[in-house]
Length: 477
Image 1 (cartoon, one colour):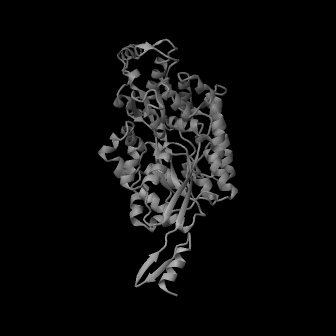
Image 2 (image 1 turned 90 degrees about the vertical axis):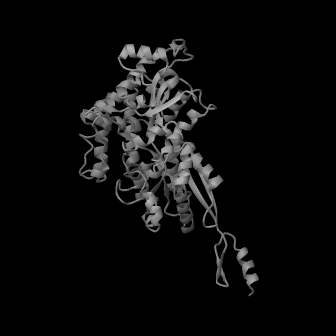
Image 3 (image 1 turned 180 degrees about the vertical axis):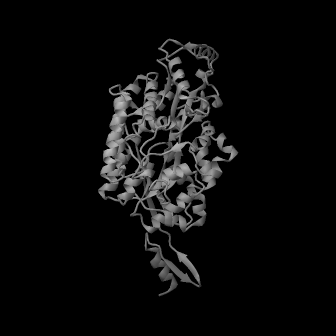
């Protein structure tokens, strides 16, 4: 057969990679490779898809398509769980919440990636420059082990979104000082120094009815000083309450201490009960929706963008909409600070918080060609240049060389709070039973948020459920 006939035969082999030696040279036909990905529908994943479509060029020469299924956050876990457990094998690439790792690793769905990292020393070196808190949260199972399953896609923390036109107003400053004997925080540095008691004072001070004077003009609607997540859905109240508990000397059940670590006596310790009481005490000063158990991160974000709240604690991942005049009435009136903390005995603020953000994970049925292209995409995604671009577009990077670059803080007004927050991030429950623990806890927190149950009853119930469930599966002796 002639060389031309051979080449003609190769050209008709659609979707099949083949090679031909001609005079010592290798001629390869490209493959069409599709990576099907499930992601939560919010700005960080929309930016990722845009970057892929506009910039990514596979080194392999293959035609690579990223087919993204954008799923609303409230439905994200249930949709992905249904897909994985059904056996349909639809997704080979998933942006997973960190708490899912244990359930989906033990279920046989998420692929361990140690071999992929060890095969590429340069990639492993980049991987190890991820800040240890996001790396442990997004990548390891068991938690804080050296068994890796995830590549960080978008790291996230809670920050304080603030209306500077309200809090910096001269008359409001004067009246706040007179009432509380303290300066009303106005600059980023002043916001960084806020405790939850200061936050509560802001909430009390800025409760105004429609028509009341607010920053020199009648309020156009009822106005509130503060907001944070207090929603029954998914993990919304837990992500806020966990921070209060850790800051005030309490703890959640610690999976790294299994099987000797207990839930009862820890989850419902006096410190944890006091922390939940502190959290609940602030709800009085929030918009009334907070008392209904539906104040999730999207509701508080919307209220803030509508100009109805002075300060809102929320994830950086939602920040882009607040800067866009098309979606925010306050886009030109913003300043950002660290989330408030708890004053320690040494006079320093304790800032523990439950980390947000997600990793990429590969599924176990992903083919070798898909794995190769997925890894090349992740290497590209975690490269310094793309991480800088991601941050410039509103994302965040946990790559040390990127976030420690002096220009990083110039990309977005909240970036000044990014690096100082990283050392204070913890995570909760990577074990397979996480969703049962979370659902029961969310239900109990909702009873407390809506005024049906006190803090002690709430945490006693949570502690007992966790103790019984974790004993049943051998995670508590």
